[in-house]
Image (cartoon, rainbow, N blue to C red; front, side):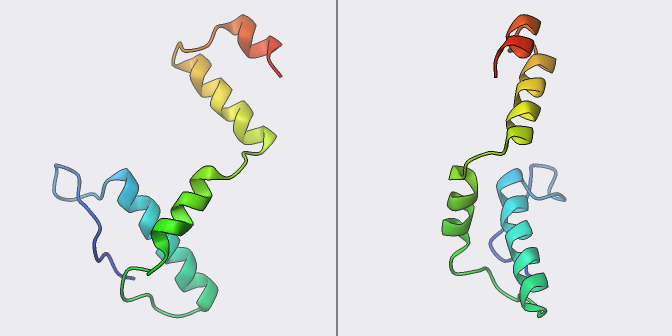
Length: 83
């Protein structure tokens, strides 16, 4: 698996969140093709854009609401009353 073009966090050890997403795309591509991915994917930016823009499932939307509640961004009343 290639880490070509990935960016490290300030600690110089771990990759940042965007790079983790690109790495995940490369990992899936390697799994799907059952081969090594030795360079960055030519279409990984487009793939990531599609993933970000996709419609979220009801479970994902509920998880986001629960996270907003846990972080104090959403009241309990809105959590239980919003569909």
